[in-house]
Length: 315
Image (cartoon, rainbow, N blue to C red; front, side):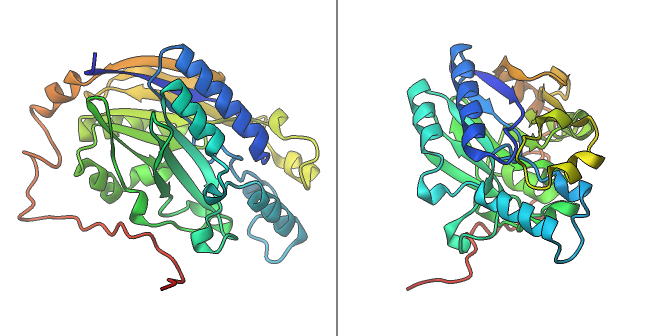
């Protein structure tokens, strides 16, 4: 049984820009996943408290406007400060249910002053311990107007039964070098989190699986026009240009041969569970191993800086 792992894909919508209410949905999904026998549950990118959809809908690049300032302040106020214990309820639940968790959050870290925010992927093990917080290395396009760039400290992998698990945020999964940094540490279960839609997941999920000969779990959130809560600052301006579907999900799992274990799930909220088997990794590594027998470190090598970056070092 140690060679198999039951994985839950939690494709849910946030209570947009309301962190406490969204955390309640996360906790309900963890309980559901555990009741279904899952040993790992994965949530989408920036789920808590949600993706900054307003940037593309309200002129997010306009300089010094009241709309952008108010929405940004609201976003920061609803972001997660791990140092203040704002994930403790999730940690306690993970320990209670004996389930590991990958959770996408907007992080407001004190080690960078407590006012800038990062798209972070948090790994909590089955003992309820936070083992890594990976801050997205390069926010994509308009995300840069609200998220700060992260560092390499979170490029870590973790043991989970027979597997070695690691993860990246959204378009980081298209970056060959961060992928390689995880492969080189023995990753064979890759977690790819997205704000949500199959146009992101349908190709890259299978590609990474074939490149790495690993299982790849892609998890997205959902977001429909009807999900924007009453009381959101400048709600009318957001809704004026918002399509009916902003994120259709597309969560899926590919096996080490690149074939679907769970094909992309569209427009359906829920917790979906599948069992994966470690021996499939060994079978597919027989003819290709990107950092093992099919690599040439005497010709090409990758150097990774994993130091957590801070502006001030107090000695």
